[in-house]
Length: 246
Image (cartoon, rainbow, N blue to C red):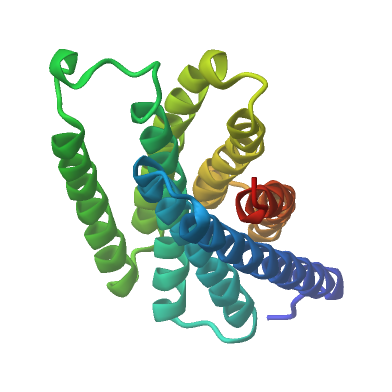
């Protein structure tokens, strides 16, 4: 079977764009993780420590996803695909949890006595959902069920992205005009794009060509990387403010 030259060129071009986009995501996520960790070290508010921890983990997950995509562009291995999917899912999850932490530590949240579910129990439920989704994702990838893996990753990413956006929107009226609101507005696009990136694999299930699907994924990867860079600038400014003596 002879493969058309134009098709080969399209695959090569898509691979190059994917590699470059993954490189941008790797660098921007690493920078974001460093500044998030620095904020956690400098912020003396105990209530904010979980928020900064989740943002640091977001940077680590984004870096891992970027690195695995870069490696996957050169070497195809199911273990790399599994790690890449899991890292992307965790990036979405950690950012959603950061928004939830920020909301429940704000004055807008209902007092502990008025909550149907306590924050501790909510965290346990969330952890259970993440564990189930992650196990399903890794299992179906290891038994080479790519379509099922795409459905699991897509559903999980979209669900947690929506979960995080709901809390982020609840924070808007309370934090408007504050430094937290500036950071929130930088992080919401990251949350939306990671959710959409998680469902991008589903395009091939609806007849979209593999090259086109990879191109769409690359666009979202570049967007996530760019949004993380702008959020890193906000984190850097916050570090400067926390480290400057009053």
